[in-house]
Length: 128
Image 1: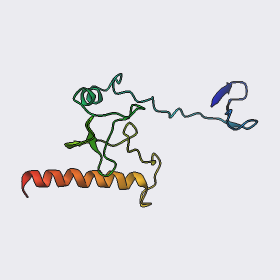
Image 2: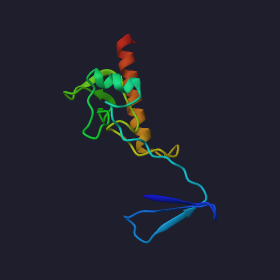
Image 3: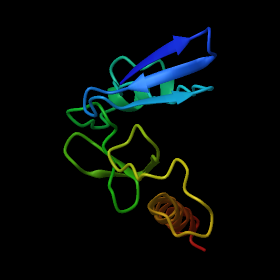
Image 4: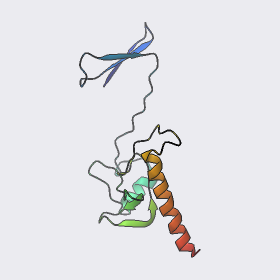
């Protein structure tokens, strides 16, 4: 994607080689890309520590998690009993940055499954 600012007209013009001949004009531009994941080079002390402690990552650098409940996987593919992760830097990403409430979106189902697993772990740990 390319974006050019036309300061005289106060607009941005965007286009893409995948859609030749088509350009879009807008008066505002929102930069909303996420950086490429890289557990080895991340500035996040938490993600770096997880990687150093044996958490697995995919070939594309995403944190490997169990897609069923979000548990962090080790390099042997085993889920950690008490580490959970959600979000765009995990292998179990669900589209849903703009999911509307009460729609049953995939991101909500993923969050619910992880919450249930974490709460079950805590309940079983406490013996309640």
